[in-house]
Image (tube, rainbow, N blue to C red):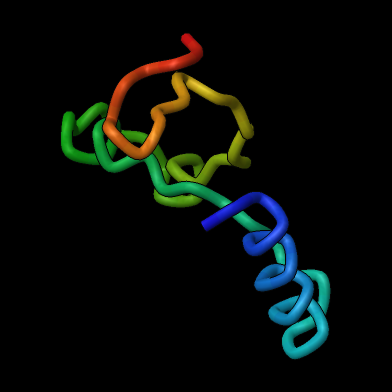
Length: 62
C-alpha cells in the first residue's frame, strides 16, 4: 500500500465515521503490570520511517 492509497482509505473512513480519534494501544506496558490506568495505555501514533525496502527486500534507506 502506498501513502496515497492509505490516505484515500482514511479519507473514506473519515467520510463514513467522522473525524475520530486514532490511537495505538501499548501492549508491552500493559503486559508488564506497572499499574497504569487503562486509558493511559492508549497513545497518539507518530508517523516515521524506520527503513525502506525495494521489491527484493533490500534496504535502500535507513
